[in-house]
Image 1: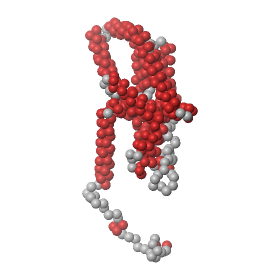
Image 2: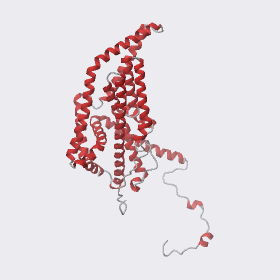
Image 3: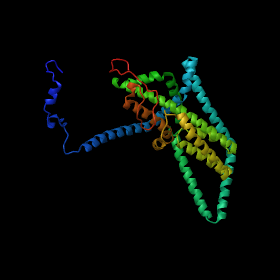
Image 4: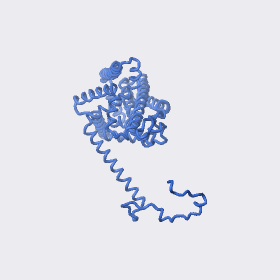
Length: 408
């Protein structure tokens, strides 16, 4: 209230006449028409914004598909950096030399992968002929037994096996095309692996300076929110990778030991396959478990197949009811519906690579969106709402807002 305005008392306010509603009504905005309902105007406003977002997302996906030979190795490097970060960070503090810590981490990772591949290749070369003979004998016995029942003819059995073979071949071609989506030649795959290793080393060595340079590409007023959102997403990605590694290891050990004790051939390759498949949540465990059960069925008969299926189901139940609640916690717990939808969409876009990166990307985007929309990057409090995931990391980054006069 200005100094020249007379001060009105309480009784003056009571005796004042009310202003007519038509004088206090907000004037209509320019371009609004009284003939268009308010709900339709709001729906139209949301519609063109959603169409714009979908168009931007479509362009981004198209660019990723075009440059997949470069994008996929970078995503692999980011996922690997989040995977080895719990080992690299304490090691760097222990040796106090970044180069030594990076060398030990990267060389150790390559050595583990090489050892697993060597073990798998050795056992396949040793047991592949026996597995092929047992599977062939199993198919012949099943063929003869079906003929003795009298319900089907030899031609119908041959037609069924031919259709089954075509189906398996088609699915194998689909999986193979997804597996080599990084490139169509061995040289491209090797180049992608070298790019992934190089980016991994750069992220471990200069991750913070690279991010600070990237942050400068955003407007100055948006940098605090973007910084907090990205760091929260990174912490979620680390939690996700660490938890998936532990779950995959326990699944592989449980199913691998079960296959070994039951006498199922190729127990080590089964364990490695389960380990790799567990990084595709929900879907990967089902597929790898089914492969292990089918292999036991064709090599040892129906009882061995049922026993292997029982082992797979037992390990799956322990994972779902014990490991996931204990290890995932509230930071990266995801609803199965969201997992199925995200993994399915990712596999439709990018095959096996899309299914592998779908859940980590969704987790990162979800936490980043919550951090920005809830304003938790200012207050440091945990957001109350979420999108795909149950909660976000309890530690919410709080950064300085340049518009504030003091440190946030």
